[in-house]
Image (cartoon, rainbow, N blue to C red; front, side):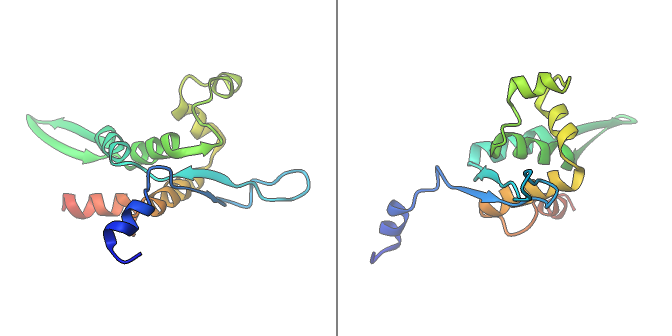
Length: 139
């Protein structure tokens, strides 16, 4: 490969996946750690998650935008984790949940959601946690 163009053509990112360890809490009966399979966010995935996380606050006639880090993390985890499938209808119903967000919060600890979101962000090419970048932009 002699040029950047040739490199790009040979290495598309539309199906970039990775298996990651989130916590040693996830073990099978033999003590082997389960891995989560994640995929990189597309630009569209990123925009959907970003828009979902932006909240408009109305206080005393003033409009103020804020970034909901929890909603952002939930969105990227639900939409970019291939295994396990947090959108699996049977699993959602089995635990008495009404949405993928409720299911996610029922089966993962807060730190595990944050770690999974961080791993997805790193695979997607972000060096910093996106919530940190959002704070920097906001300020």
